Amino acid sequence: MVMKKLLRIATLMGGLGLKASVTFLVLGLATGTAHLEHQARLGLGQDEAAASRAMPAGQTEKPRAMALSTGLAPNLFLLDQVKEQAFQKPLFDKKSSAYDKMIEDAARTHRISPALVKAVIQAESKFDDRAVSSQGAVGLMQILPSTARSMGVSSPQEPRNNITAGVRYLKMLLEEFGDDEYLALAAYNCGPEAIKRYGGKMPPFSETRSFVSQVMRYYQSHIES
Image 1 (spheres, one colour):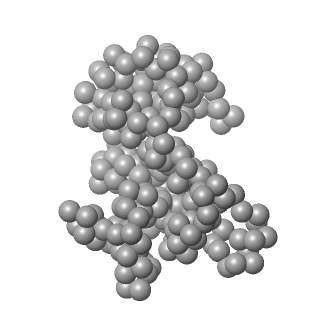
Image 2: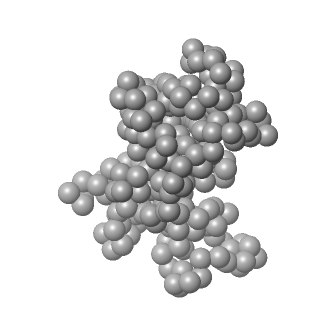
């Protein structure tokens, strides 16, 4: 089972070549596969993973000058954030329970995980139905009015409508990207066209990768709760 999991991760790292894939397999056997798979899906390279594993406990932040002097890739700091955030159980806002029925109804209708929907809401608005972004995205799932209209939903500020529009849009993205949750979440953040521009892979935007990491952290915790 472990080898099968590692081989799947190696496939995700296909662009790195045979030597890199073998390095990741050995590293995965030594340290476990959960972090490694997460790193692979976010498009983090072998130097960053190895550097992170070698980093002494409590030293998750390195000065930029040291990172450059040792030849580490600039994603080193992002990797630290991913490692710290993605596999820790967070404390959830108590307001989340007020929307459980709406979330479950929409998720059931569109055959999507309620835990994933809650994770997106947690990351996007922290369950604040009055949230408005600087780009004009509104409500729990931070939906643009134009996106809501394209999903056949009016009044996206209203919680039920907002959840309906957000779930429909997320389901559309999951279908577009072959049920790949990482790519669907990235597209939710930066738009599907950006994913296509980068050959159907995780784009190099730090904001997008941070968003995906945060949602997957919440997703895991909602599943376990």
